[in-house]
Image 1 (cartoon, rainbow, N blue to C red):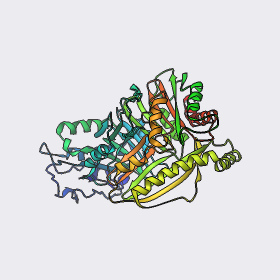
Image 2: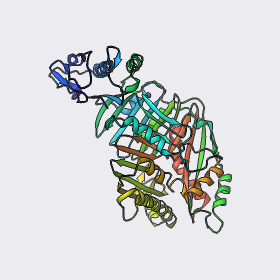
Image 3: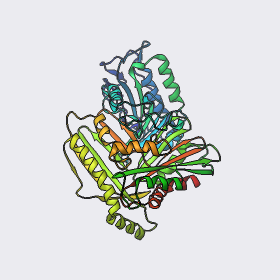
Image 4: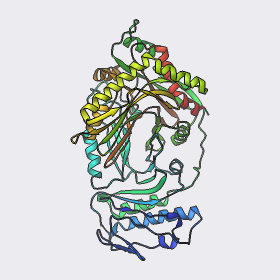
Length: 517
């Protein structure tokens, strides 16, 4: 059960109102009197504004923290927890706070960020109230069942945020190169943040999540200490200069890339597979350690109309990116997905951009690449849905790093369809793997000279009635003074090694510009 406490019109609430304490002996189901106001769990606690307003944002933010702190203390009654299960969620409106600036101002091991492509939802999370993770994965059921069990009594508000690796459970990964750089991330890792700033439809709230079964006096003191250390500074402090690049190494290099390409594409242009996506890893060494969030914030500014994601399981070690592609989103029984395949660069001028768009729409190679992905998603929707629809023909969507062919799908799920089934059928799509899927994935394990880890995996959130995942593209894995960039290109009949190499160069260009600034 989600104990959901919310204040309304916080900017105009008197400081005196916020100093009012909850009754110490409050219990579930009984009204708690606050001066002349009262509420019953799980009803919302709403204060009405008065003429006595506060102009100081510093005082106001301290009031936010005080309000949450008092509600946290109220979770113990005579030293014993008054909640035994579910997730306790405390919220206060917090207008005027920038999610990413707030996240940068905090000191914490765990940090997570997520925003959708149309900027209607943005969150920044700090700390770990709970985590669900594994170094190996035998099936997606284990992941979703663990999270849904925690959320089953929590209402619609709390979300677990995180990522899932590229290789699905069904692929024999015995020969996979499991590199140490991915150890902290594992096969999947999801966090329920301790504290969040969330902006949804232009309304911002500050939230605190607590797993009810874990409530003890020691945990309460831990939360209060963490809350006291939070900063609501409007501008991040510290050095935001990115150190210079000392060296760059390509995996594979161009010679090996051409060799790998020739193993899958004959001189006549015939393919060993209908489609295979070969990826490259670019290893960049900086002259000094750098803060990943500094790079990420610059990336967010450079890449509008993208899904932005950031996951930090330990200080200074983060995976992040700006993806143009949705994997799927589910709200209740409604599901949406998209085929995003076929790429051209953006032009330096409007005229050049339009020329690239025209070339994309007339390209037989890109049309074939897109058709393969669209057919795979269509087949998945036929198995998952009682009904669905899709665009009549692909159109062009323009992102910062390129322009792509897109076909959108919408459907109503069958009653028996669950999230594990959806993910199993949609991930990975031929847009990031290839087809026939099983043979291609096994080939990638054997031929790519690096571990994909979370690159081209799924990143997003899992909630009670909704799930939203992007394909983890246009991404970087950053630790200390090392930045590893990942990007791939879809190879079909008609592809050439040098053209696909250049396509990947275009996808990396924004990152390289940021790191060189």
